[in-house]
Image 1 (tube, one colour):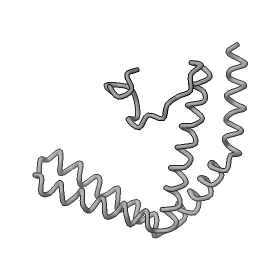
Image 2 (image 1 turned 135 degrees about the vertical axis):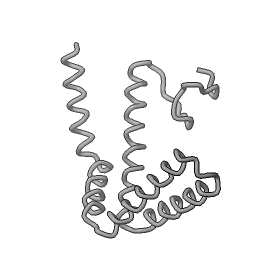
Image 3 (image 1 turned 30 degrees about the horizontal axis):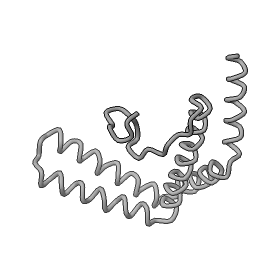
Image 4 (image 1 turned 45 degrees about the vertical axis):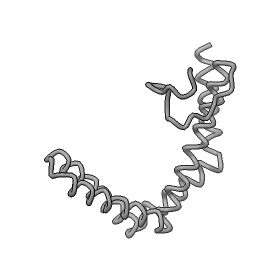
Length: 131
């Protein structure tokens, strides 16, 4: 039985690899990772995020943290608006949503019940749906 499951998982992986969502993601990733301006924007974001973590660790105060959060949000907007990186993140979001649907179908196969689309991200500590 375990061997059959592993074969089915491999076959599923191959099908996912041929899906429109995966192909689009890989194409957009390739474009974004070879775009100098896009790479610089992503590096700038990483630097700001690191500065935020250091400021929080060093307890530099709410005004400094708020300023860094604002700069991070502005940089994220810039990344979304810049075509190569924006296309990549849009494709990644679409692929992630597709994979969530696939996982929900797998869970439905296990439990016999359709999975509800829970917005909380998980049941740990959630009192929303009562499960």
